[in-house]
Amino acid sequence: MLLKLIRVEKGLCVAGMAVSGTLLVMLVLMSGINVGCRLAGHPFSASYELSGLFGALIASLALADTQRKRGHVELDLFTRKYSAATRRRVGTFNVFAGAVLMLLLGCQLANRAGVLLRAGEVSETLKLPYPWLMYGATFGFFLLAASFLTDFVMLAFGHTDKNAYAQQRAHTVNSIRGDIEQPDEGASQEPDAPPDAPAT
Image 1 (cartoon, one colour):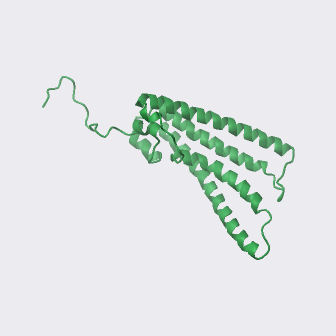
Image 2 (cartoon, rainbow, N blue to C red):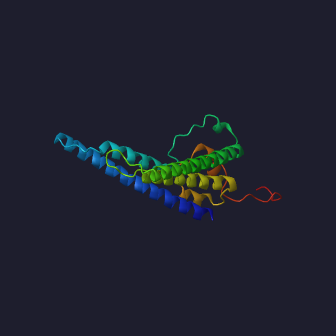
Image 3 (cartoon, rainbow, N blue to C red):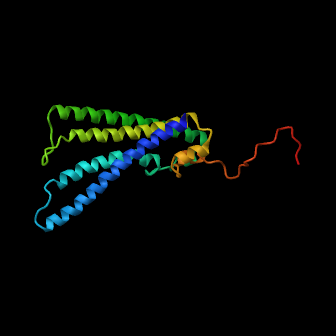
């Protein structure tokens, strides 16, 4: 069940990153073409506006896949000294709180977009109904919440097959889960002998 959840999360996060990457390529091309047009005396009047709108979507849609790959900066000044059980509890609380925060932000943004749409708000230069793009950013927040919730399920209920889990998730893990997911280097891979077995 957990692996299925991880696969769904991975697919959604990769889709968000693909859209974000496509927008980034379009933004770079537009900027490059605009430089040439400026030299010719005919710059794009809406380049600044589109850069702002694309930039917001690029950032919001890339958040979830970055979280899935552990690409965000983490400070573990204190947590590295905690026991494995404490790190698990702290990590569980952190990712759950992050999911709640992203859901609240997404709902607030969606509500604001609806208000602006009903008011007929459009962008200054191109007259685009930009509140629709706010829904795209909302989707990015919800994707990040889904990634946090997947981490919450893993930390709260554990995962028996760590190798299968590692294949689905990123190869690098943060410090809160690093010692939990990775077996001890000195641990034996063979099953322990029964307590009453004679020593050899």
